[in-house]
Amino acid sequence: MINYTVSEENYIKTIHRLQQYGTVTTNALAAELKSKPASITAMMKKLKAKKLLNYQPYYGFRLSAEGNKVALLIIRRHRLWEYFLAEKLQFSWDEVHEVAEHLEHVSSKKLIDKLDEFLGFPTADPHGDPIPDAQGKIKNIQKVCLTDLPLNKPATVCQVADQSPSILELLNHNQIKIGTRVEVKRKFDFDNSLEIKTKQTAPFTISEQLAKNIFLNYAE
Amino acid sequence: MINYTVSEENYIKTIHRLQQYGTVTTNALAAELKSKPASITAMMKKLKAKKLLNYQPYYGFRLSAEGNKVALLIIRRHRLWEYFLAEKLQFSWDEVHEVAEHLEHVSSKKLIDKLDEFLGFPTADPHGDPIPDAQGKIKNIQKVCLTDLPLNKPATVCQVADQSPSILELLNHNQIKIGTRVEVKRKFDFDNSLEIKTKQTAPFTISEQLAKNIFLNYAE
DNA sequence: TTATATTTTTAGTTTTACCTAAATTTTTAT
DNA sequence: ATAAAAATTTAGGTAAAACTAAAAATATAA
Image 1 (cartoon, helix red, strand yellow):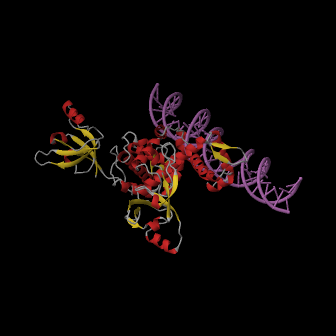
Image 2 (tube, each protein chain N blue to C red):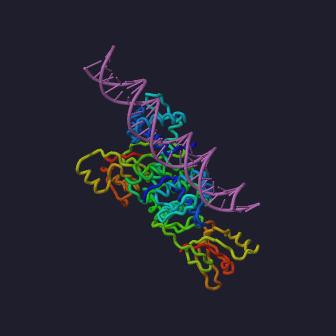
Image 3 (cartoon, each protein chain N blue to C red):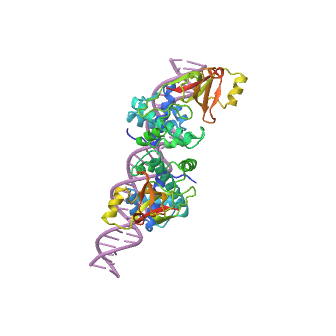
């Protein structure tokens, strides 16, 4: 893969994120990148010339197939570094992003693939977002109930069905909230209770009734 | 500390290296940075304005006290990343430099101090060069005989006193050469033989006679 | 010591990535 | 349908960091 400037990479990454909600407009990109519309137009011409972007003046833009490939490799670098910072250097989840913003632009393929191996090929970053593999492929993210989560496969809490004060009290007591990474360590047939573990806690047991109300994003 | 551009950091680092042999000249710096003399003069004006450099037009340059402090922190980042690449990601010693050249410009202090801790506060990089601490202090490097090296303190082979074919045969057999990192694991009083270990080998024993001929750079 | 060679600096360009202000195109609202 | 508003692009400018070519200062050698 060709190398791109830090600036180009930041544009590609941001377009990739915004285009999930439709075509991206000049103003939207300018706001997101804290830049000015005129600067956006200039860069769009450059990215179009490099075949990374489909774009007609006065209409929105979308990344080309090649542009998407580049975006996914940048996202891969970003999320692997986030995982490294949280898992190995004990950064808290809200500190990892800013540092990863800089590390992601170091573009040695060998570095990233070795880092991936060193980290044990993680499938999601500390925020629960999926990490693309070396080919830029992202595993399917599916929403599963905690009762259906395979053993020893970490997943991220994304929804709680029942919102009553009593369940929230219990979740709070167990330090479980939206975004928490959870792993099921054991299943007990007697009452279908589950032994689970989060990063902050030692393993503990929860009832089937509670587990039925917790849904998670799980990277297949 | 203020942040500097990648270009400024590369100049500072290179001046720091060259000034060990006296004042640095425009041509020497241009050759080292694969740049042109006119470009050097322009950057020297900038670094002087930022109080990092002492410099009179038409005479050589030296870093100011502040400039040296900055240089040592850049070197610290570079060497910690080299250590990380070799030790954790299994890069060979000749591959680490190029990647570290890029990683060294990510200037989060917290990142570097946490990395240092994660690596166990190493005192030398894979080439045996000393790693400055968080204050920019470098431990004294002293040349010691392998017989005098403290237990479990890695050091780098820098000299072999006897150069006869027979000793070289033995060193070759044990995969020891200039630049090899060696650690003494045990000392046996009976015959003063030493159990040592290198990165490539399991622990093995060598005679006092051989040890007496091996000298190492040891970071106190 | 004076002429020549070397080194260094100045002057003027280029490229990248940003900016402001003005012009143009598209959208929206009466 | 057309005027006003909003969005986008063009035109022209700035700063950083490189370059070439020419001028100036220093070093060296006859």
